[in-house]
Length: 403
Image 1 (spheres, helix red, strand yellow):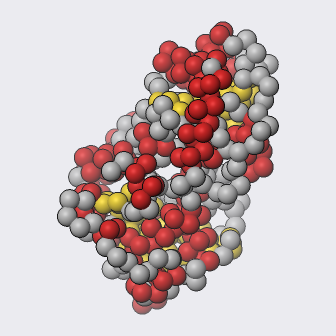
Image 2: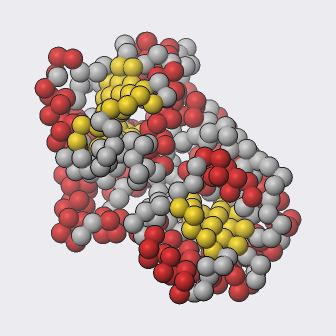
Image 3: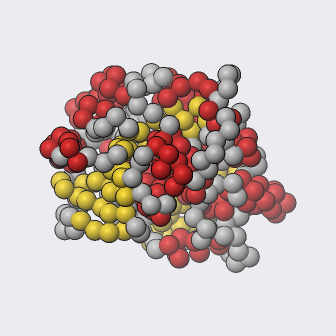
């Protein structure tokens, strides 16, 4: 069953169940978050995350956690997100029905979260959800019996892009060799089939424990007739090395040679900003390629709606949330063929998968040059995104936790 089939069927997936009688195929009277939580006795949940949505470096993982926390809280579950604290940020706050606690800094959050849980062993929550984002919290060692992990993708060589060499080697070793043995009996939820395959093969997690639950798309992402008159390519994400925006800039410069009226926007903030601005100046592209920084929700929707196509050259993604957000606005994508993107883009239906370089230039060129193709991909993107809702993601994630 493909991810597209999953969306059409309304089922959650776990490969170990497919050949026999999948749990998702068994008659289940508990259809909503509230029913599932009550049936399992889950009144309170602590979500452990490296960052929360208010962190300056927040991205798709934080959006995913926040939307699920909001919907679980709306169903009557007491949800707390425990995360690291950025300099100058509040230690506690309320957000959309759930609470956020930031008891420690960027790296100290991992031991502090464990120490806090052990200290309040008699008053711990009914369930713990760990968001394993590269460095694990090792929650199976100290959390309660009912627990679950959100693991969006394996970081692998990504460690080399975000850490100095000695720390990168240590991070890879912990992720791939040390941590997996602690999670042998913990249910894992990931976002895509391709990420699931990677988790099973590289981390050697039991396939029966790994369930695919795609993310949703907020209702504010809607199609519009306000497309730019001239070609506009948009890319969105944190400006960090593994997103490979430098490769995308090179692609856009080559594309501009074929489309002299091309405009492009790369929206986001991060530590690669200065390098990217230098690269844009080096190519003399400042007049048509802009880096506006982080944009608000309204500006983001506006960009997606006006764009002819969105692009991503990222090397690592658990899904590619910006791609399906754009799809909900009727904007197709051209994205690198990596785990996550393999599911977020239906190749030839909602966009194209293409390697950054000449192949990506050709794919973007085809969409910009061919009105018929662009309209067909527009319809395919809308159709695909229509099945992606956060309500469904929240229910299926709670189903795994309640199980």
